[in-house]
Image 1: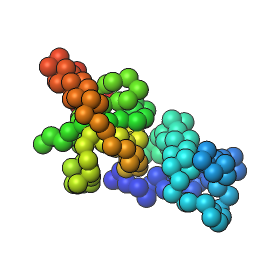
Image 2 (image 1 turned 120 degrees about the horizontal axis):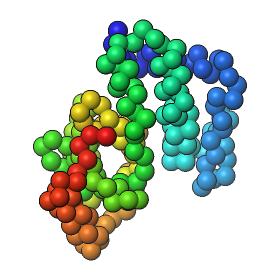
Image 3 (image 1 turned 90 degrees about the vertical axis):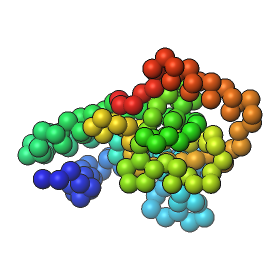
Length: 185
């Protein structure tokens, strides 16, 4: 049985039917509105609405547990992949450079350095022409022996000055020299 989106969508739909409280209305901090099914003048792709929906509803750790509990017939390797998603890392990252085996991201919260692979397209292809370094908001998750993204990546349109560029480059070089680059979670 392949690990596929259809199964997780079916699961999500079952959970929605079972519980009215499953979907809390996310609130946009910028506009002070919650999503009630009718956006009106509100931007449906507002960063706050999208990110709070993803963080609180879809990637909630208890949803992984429920999914695994209710799908006992999953092959063991698929169960391990889903269980590994509990180790995901969320936050703001500086996309520092592209390498052959992935792109280097530096956490803006704790300075940890991650090498993240693209699933179908490389990060370089996805952000072709974007000025580097680039600040993004993302969720990184383990997939077998590499780190990938959950697919929802929100770049910030901020130009980074020379001093910050050097600081992040130095962070990468120090992590590389000391072997502190996270290539798996």
